Length: 151
Image (cartoon, rainbow, N blue to C red; front, side, top):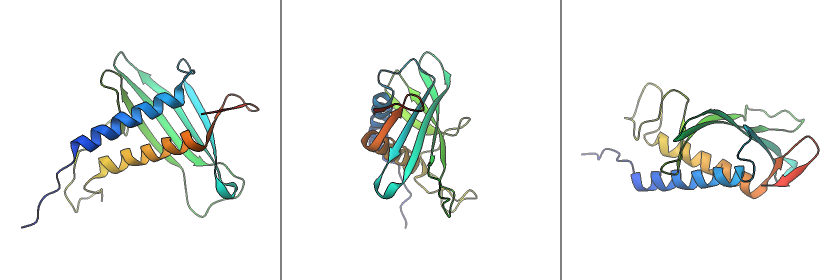
């Protein structure tokens, strides 16, 4: 008999804590702003932009809209824009992906109508971790159209 998928909650929580810290590092010294822009320069002249915009804020949570996409003049053969909503839980120090009006389940049966992976929640939060780590490593904070500051 085949075992059903059981989400690894400790790794999911660890990933959420690390993502919360990464977001905090990106916002450092600019916490009062409502939008943060970063330009990411990588090998081969590939340039991208990551933007974080504050959507809503309450006493214990904040919701950010994250967008990441190609910035160059040359058109790509595929749509490379990533857009996601990130909810920050300040009381427990966690960040997780939501789509604005629903949260992802810990596991999904396979196959399903939406063709989601059985560990969709973990994969989306791992993608967030990868984008934030890329921005911390190679990103420059865009203060205005002429000045840059290392993230």
